[in-house]
Amino acid sequence: MARNIVVGAAQLGPISRLDSRTSAVDRMIKLMDEAKQQGVELIVFPELALTTFFPRWFIEDQVELDSFFEREMPNLETAPLFKKATELSMGFYLGFAELIEESGKKRHFNTSILVDDKGSLIGKYRKIHLPGHFENEPSRAFQHLEKRYFETGNLGFPTFKAFGGQMGMCLCNDRRWPETFRMLGLQGAELVMLGYNTPAHYPPVPKHDHLNDFHNHLVMQAGAYQNGTWVIGVAKAGNEENCDLIGGTCIIAPTGEIVAECKTLGDELIVYQCDLDRCTEIKNGIFDFAQHREPENYKLITETKGVKIEGSD
Ligand code: ING
Image (cartoon, rainbow, N blue to C red; front, side):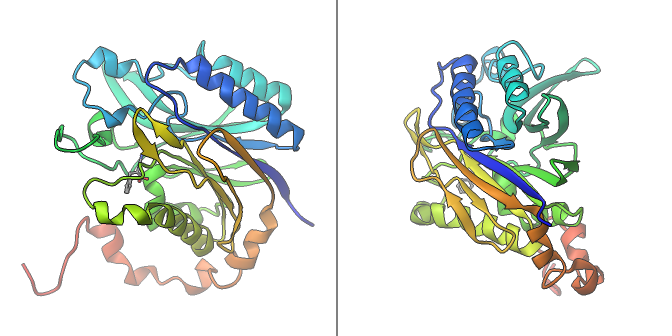
C-alpha cells in the first residue's frame, strides 16, 4: 500500500526591492492554480518568499529593515494565499522574515511555516544556521548579513505529523549541515521541505563559484539518502537586484535520486507523486538508525563547536 502525496515545488524568480508582497503573493497563487491542475496536495515555496533577499544590503535604518518583516501571519497581504490554499485544499510551506515582540523586546527570525489544506498553521521553524557575517564588509560586491538581521532559531528542529506522514522543515544554509537532516531523521522525517536564496557568487571563495549548483544538490541528495527521506528544495532564483541567485529547485527521493528539477531561473512549478512508504527502503535497511548508529562514539558532535585536535592546545 503506497502512502502517496502529490507535492509541488514552486520556484520563484527574482523579487525586486520595491515589489509589493501582494505581487509576490499573486505569483504564488498563480503557481497554486497550476499545481491544482496537476493534483498537487502540498506546495513548497522558497525562503524569504515575500520580499527580495534584503540581507544583501547593509541597512542601518531599523524602520526600513523592519519593513521587510511580517508581524503577523497570516496578515493583510498574505491572507489571499491562505484563502486560496483552503479553496484548493492545498497545504503549503512558506518562508518569510518574522518579527515578534516578546516582553517588550523585538525579535527577528528567518522563518518557515507549514500550513494544512484548510489554511491552519501546523508548525513553524526558525533558521538555525545563519550564514554570512555581522559587520558591513564594503569590499564585497554584495553583503550577506543574515547574522546581523536574524537571531538564531529558538524552536529546534521539530517534525510534524501531517499529510499522512512525518514532515520536517529547514531553511537554506541549514541544508549544508548534516546535523540538520540527522536531527529530522532521528524524529522519523519522511519529507523535508526547504527554501533557499543562494547567490551564484560566493565572495569568500570565488574559485568555487562554478561548484555552487553541484554543492546545492550534493547536500540535499546526501541529506535525503542518509536519512531515508524525501527532500523538496525550492529556490528563489535569477538575477535579483543585480545579484545572481542559483536555481536548481528539485524533488529528491529517499534514495538520493533527483526525480524532478526546474529548468529555468523564473517562476516554475515541478510536481511529483511522493510515496512516503519508499522511505522504509532506506530507514529499515542501510540507514536503520537503531541497528547501526553508535552515538557513544559521536560525543564530539554535540560537545564541541569548532575543531578539537588531541594533543594540541
Ligand atoms: N544562502 C546561502 C546558502 O547557504 C551561501 C549562503 C551561499 C553559503 C553560497 C555558501 C555558498 O545557500 C542562505 N540564505 O543561506
